[in-house]
Structure formats: C-alpha cells, structure tokens
Length: 70
Image 1 (cartoon, rainbow, N blue to C red):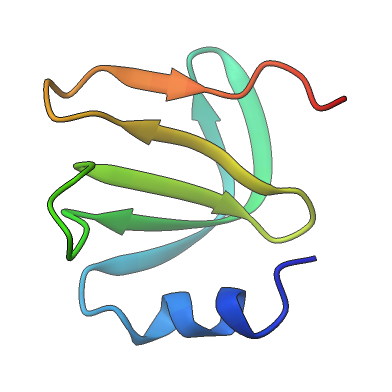
Image 2 (cartoon, rainbow, N blue to C red):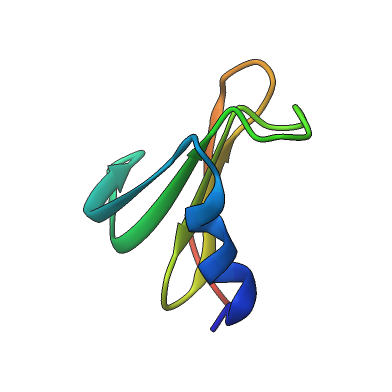
C-alpha cells in the first residue's frame, strides 16, 4: 500500500521489522518500527506493510494506536 515510501523505511538506521507486534493490546503483522524519528516530531512510528500507519508515540512518549480504518 505504501509503495516506495515503505521501502525507504529500511534506510533509517533506527528502524526494525517485526513480523508480529502488540500495541495497546492490538496485534499487527509485518510492522516497521522507526525509533526517534529524524524530525523529532514523534519518538516512535509503526507502519504495517498492508495497512500503513498503525501507531506512534508522541513527544511525551504516549502511545497512540489506530483502532479502526474506515
């Protein structure tokens, strides 16, 4: 779904790939995790290969998770 942008996530030195991850009691598969984003706007970003952005941590380290896609 994310195309070229998704491939670019692997270029971050601070990224990792998780086959399965649980965020706020929600399970996701095939997720890239980017820690300490370059722009310092968010502390962590979570992108699922199939559906895109699934969660992030704000500057206060509060985890926000997508609960539905409409």
